Length: 407
Image 1 (cartoon, rainbow, N blue to C red):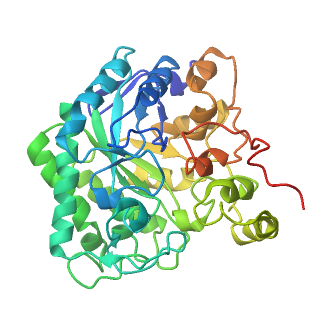
Image 2 (cartoon, rainbow, N blue to C red):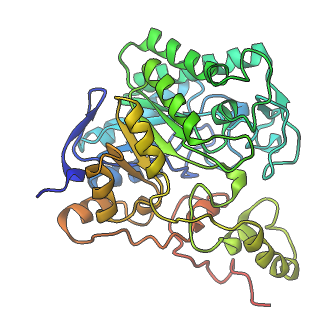
């Protein structure tokens, strides 16, 4: 029987030739203006040629103060960027593959040293990773500006030829900060109950729908995190229902926050060598201090288990609660697991990030029987080393000039 993963399907009128989606992945490839580069065009075209059912871009910032601290972030904060994106979408569409722009604001997970602006958040709570400063708590005017920025960016995406947008509401970025009781300590209409915490999202969806009509708007949410008072599966299910009632086209289910270490992208060993080589806190450390720090990092930031299929249970619960498509991401790297996720009814689609980093044509290889699993070893160097340069697979090993000498 032909695997369900390779049957065509639709998301709010977007036709996908299969059910395998390239999940949003920051590439550190954008021009200084935030426009996509020639490297982006090649990457996304390669993904299209390689059989991806759909491509979700790396996150694109909607405001300057929401730009990531990593280099080369895509932006969609002004109209001058539209022509460059139109060239990109035209290139991808020549191969019959839909492309969706992920929109984001990084909230407190950035640094004013990079953005040139004060970091902002629902509540003035320091992030454990980006803790150089306490963020400024957003007031009504600031929240309204962010809502308008998401709505305007969605309109630009449509003009640029994207098939839809995905609103980034996971991994501890701004909208996830509003949704989580751990980061949202507000007592006004933007905090407290689930409905109040969701209000900023509902306003974004309502206004996009008012201005753009049937233009597909997807969401990426956390099914859970490990913060005290943070997101739990039962509230994620409630949020999924609210998204459906807001006109959401599909929900991608992920988990975790950046300050939890390897919770988002799990693996058997913490990539301490990569972190020490390029992270802004560690890269200038003397080598002897790095040698002492490496084992401490591994102890302080263990990766939770399981390493595979870790969002499927929550995705299944959400799928039971909504009628719109559900996309599962997180360690689903083998054809057996992909097929099981879809055929068991846990998800309608499977998205992957790391497998597409090591093999842009992984879908074609799985579909033709050349492979039955990704070659990814889950070292997570790709996720760390983007702080120092463009996205690539390192396969768990740095060049000698960057590697940490043995003590």
